[in-house]
Length: 80
Image 1: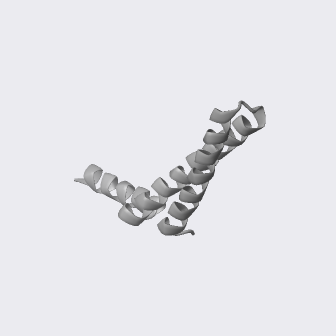
Image 2 (image 1 turned 30 degrees about the vertical axis):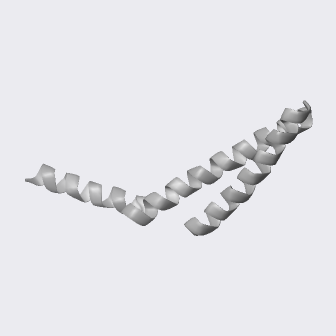
């Protein structure tokens, strides 16, 4: 499992690359640069998803544990 810091560092690096590609694209249209930007956007979206999931796991605990607690609470409510 990666740390939030490692994810942020990768996001920063890819964002810098994307910024440079946008500058190149603004100077002259190039379909390969456009494709590279789209590829980086997809990677960045995946990294932000990973970041949100990790942050939620750190804050609230593992998803499976949360579901197990919810089921226990539901059973207790039904029994009461």
